[in-house]
Length: 218
Image (tube, rainbow, N blue to C red):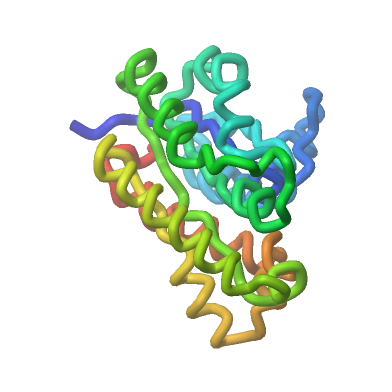
């Protein structure tokens, strides 16, 4: 059965955040990243059905931070579709030796989020986006650790998507291929945060997966 999504929630860290406005100013409510690009594309194409796009990404957040605010910033909103892109801060805290990265809670916290969402909002679709990095800027030092950790997280997200029967948006390979067209810094200026072109890449991959799925927004 095809499900028509009316309220689409985006969750994550600074990549999702994009400095979205924390008030009702319609100029800024989606931020300036891939969420804005997706909202612009579908908002124009689907003006008759007027889908609602909600950004609740918060810069610096890890999966455990998302879980801590999940009731307020996800469950209570009762969206038709929830998209998550998170993981780079989990990796960063561990690689940097931060006290908050003393244990790796990525898979455990991610699983808790999916279990609770499936239980409380069984009709809500879920889109899990693959975390990614490129070798430039902040990731050049300790690059092998960065890539290994993100590859591990990518596998976790892919496996959770299969287990919980959610959509999965692959992004690392897309960025790897893009970096062959132009330098890594053209797509992700500091190795972590995408440029405008990088956000467009995310938007294109997201739309390709979601709009060709049972949860296509119409």
